Length: 102
Image (cartoon, rainbow, N blue to C red; front, side, top):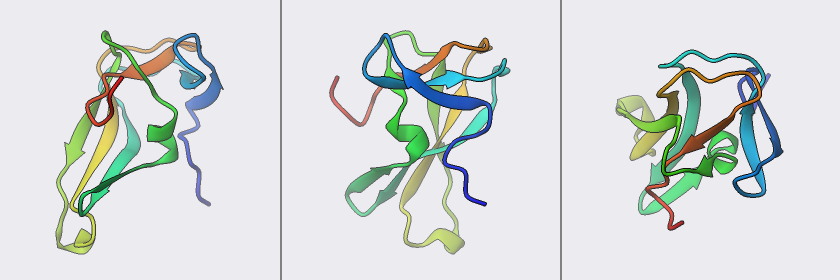
């Protein structure tokens, strides 16, 4: 069954902006939470995970580029969300935006 978010995350009202991603449980540093963006041609697409993460100049997550293989010929690039520090239950996950202007 398709799940747009890992079970460790939920979407709630954010103090940063609108809605944001929040930890449902403690999440260890270095955890791969899934794919956030795909690039096909000149267009970047956000996944549900990438669509709800808010910007911060002091983020607790990063986008890590995933190498594409011959099996993913239509996708030029893809990125996953990885925690850069331990995240506590209830804490909002944030990212430094690089694809969009803040």
